[in-house]
Image (tube, rainbow, N blue to C red; front, side, top):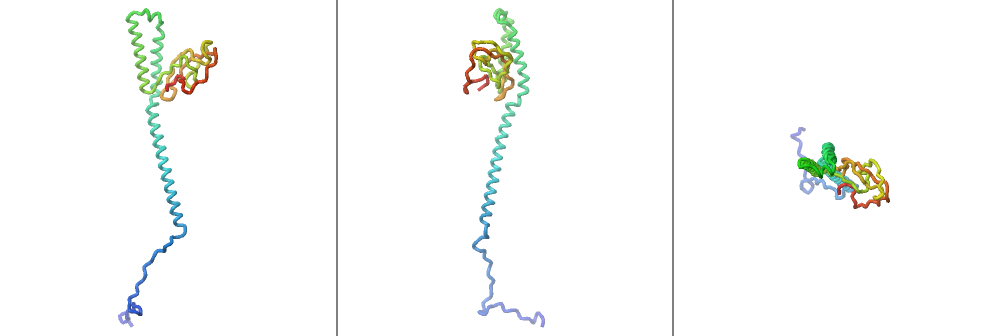
Length: 204
């Protein structure tokens, strides 16, 4: 018997209707633990996202602070060199005695006024860039902003009061560019505790 002679199989049921295979139906209940697994993965993904956002915010703040500090403190070296010019102008003014200034001829008076104007212009230019001059005369000694060079017997002021300024100090931003060189009184009553609102020669 050949394949041609072979009769096709009967694909009909006893009732005469064709047999149709049933489609696969997903079970109603998921596999045990799958919901908990998905919830865990979602929580981990959310935690990673929040951590990333926090790190990006911290990076943004650090970058902004570094940029601001760079703008403010980037001229520190230059400003420190310029202070020598301010010192020399002040020395030139201090070298002229008060008597000589009072009796000076118009030419010398003009010279003195020119030096004073130059010094004021220099100080003003420094202040525009965040550099401020400290004048602690009569204030309580503060080691953060002042450097004591010697003690002066003076019972008329409380001990620890700055009574002489040998060299002006300067700050840049919140940092000390150069401490003021001062003489401090060692006589008299002790200075009262500094109030938190009082200035110690530093800019507010």
